[in-house]
Length: 423
Image (cartoon, rainbow, N blue to C red; front, side):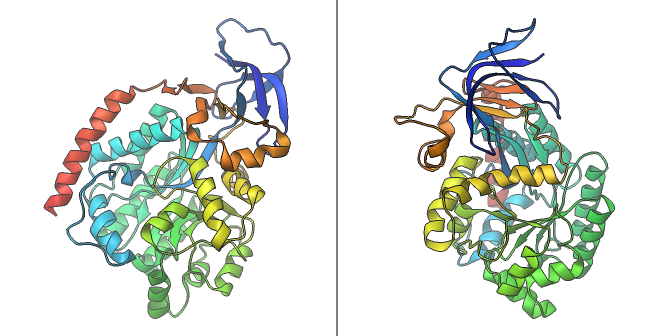
C-alpha cells in the first residue's frame, strides 16, 4: 500500500528548493517517492492532505545512547562527582551495570518512540550493559523495528569491567554483525587495552565495518593515553588502523592537538558533535577548525531531538566554533551523507516528515536557514513516514501503544533505580 501526500509544499533537503506537488511514497527499506501533479489515489492508498504544510526528508541521529533512557528523574548518586571520570563511575557506569533484559527493552522502546515523534527515523546507537551483554543488541533492534525506526547499532566494548566482559562484548558484536548492519563499538581509549583495541579493529575489517568510539571527550582521555602509550588518542587509533574506514565514527573530539586534527582530516572517518552533553558534563567545547568536512550531529543520549541538537551547536558555536547558518544545517544533514556513502540501509528517500509549521512570516528557499535555526521545532513534526510506512500520524504513534510502553518503562525505571541504590 502506498501513501499519497496531497497538496504538499515539498522542501528538497539538499538544495532547499520549495515546490508544490503531490507525492506518492512507496513502502520498503529502499523505497522511493514520486512527484505528481493532481494525482488521483489508487485503490488502497493512504491519502494525507498536506495543504499548508511542508514535507521534507526525515532526520537522523549520529550518536545516541539507548541505555540512558531511564535516567530521567533518578536520585542523586551516592557521592557527588567532582570530575568527568567520577561522573562516569558514580552515574553512568553504575546505571549500565544495573541494566537487565527488561530495562534494556524499555530503554530502547522509549528512545525509539521519542525519536519517531521528533521526526528521527534513523539512529546510530552506542550501547552498554556489562551485566547483560549477550543478546542486548537484538533486543534494541527489535524495539526500534517495532516502533518503525531504522538503526545502526554497536556494543560498547571496554576493559573496565574485566577482560571477560570485553570478550563478551566482542562476541555479542560479531553475532549481531552476522545478521544485521552494525559498527564495532569501543568505549574510549582510557578503558580499552591494546588487545581489545586490536581485536575490535580486526573485527571491523572482517565485516567491512567501522569503529564507533568516544575520543578526547575529556582531557583525562588524552592524559591517560600519553602516559600509558606515549602518544595521543588519535595517534593510537591511527596506529591500530581504526582510522582507515569511512564507517568509523569518533564521538566528541574536544581536546585534540593540531596533529590529531590533521590525522582526522586526511582520513575518511567521521566526527560526531554532542554539544549539550558536553555542556552537561562540563568537559569543554567543540571546535571544528582543522577537522575537515565529515562532521555530523548526535545527542549522546541526552534527548532524541535533532532540531534541538542543531540549534545548540549553532548557539554555543558562536563563542567557541566557526559555525554559521549553512554550517549548522550541513552538520544536521551530514548524517545522511554518512549513511549513503557507506551503503547502510534505512534512510532512503521514502523517509519523510510532514511539518505543520505555523510561521508568522514568509517561509521560502531564500530564508529557510533562518527558520531552521529560529523557528522550526519538534512540535511542528505532525506526520512521520519511515521506509514508506506512516509511523506517526497527527502527532500520535501508529505501530505501538505509547501509554502501555510508558507504563512498562516507569515500572522498569523504578526497578533499575532500586538496583542502582543497592550497589
